[in-house]
Image (tube, rainbow, N blue to C red; front, side, top):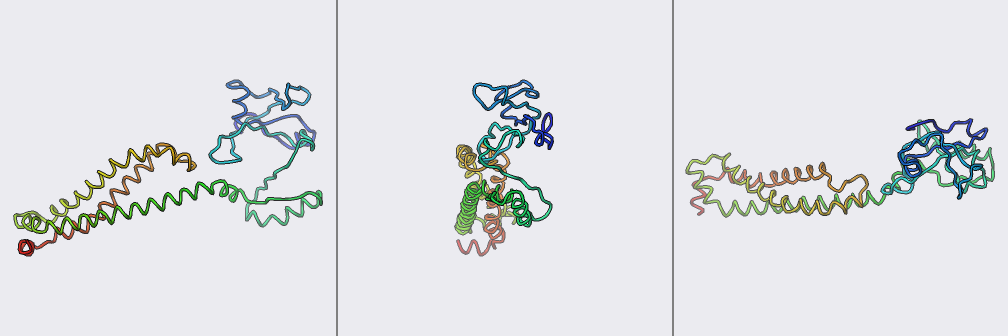
Length: 265
């Protein structure tokens, strides 16, 4: 509830021609004006005899899909609508334990009200949300899988490139050590090359990621066009992977024996 009141049992029993509308409908019908106490009708032209007085405004809710905009919605008391205008009804049952354990009790209750009344499509709200996000989660899973494969290729590629570079520069590194270069200095020299390569990859990849942000936003619920947090975490993960992949060749280079290196040369 944002303004006014909700529908109570007195509205159902008497019945009263009242309605609660969501923000989308209030904005559509009345723009910036106060919708409370105004009347709406679902007949064209406006029919005062079948109109409903707005008594409350509630937040928007999504029904058909997570990516679609919340539709303008009005909530009406069952008694004020009439059976002839109802195609189907959905009941929500709030529980404190396992919701599915209440299904036999709900069936028994409905049978007591009307044995000919069908009860179909029983599901928990959690399963309903999972069904609505099924395609998004599949796309997110595939994207994560390809992302991990790309990260693995980055690690393997950097390791192989640096290991090959260290093997070719064994003599040079040996001379540096013989001239007084410390193991830490050699370690940073090789590790810096790994980070430079990763930085070049980020400079090339970030514009492409920003350009493809619209595709991710259209496929994944809750992902913005320019998701700063995701981009920052991804860039940090790539740099950390480059540092780990380059550490082994860098550590090996820092432990090179200068005599063996010069003899190898």
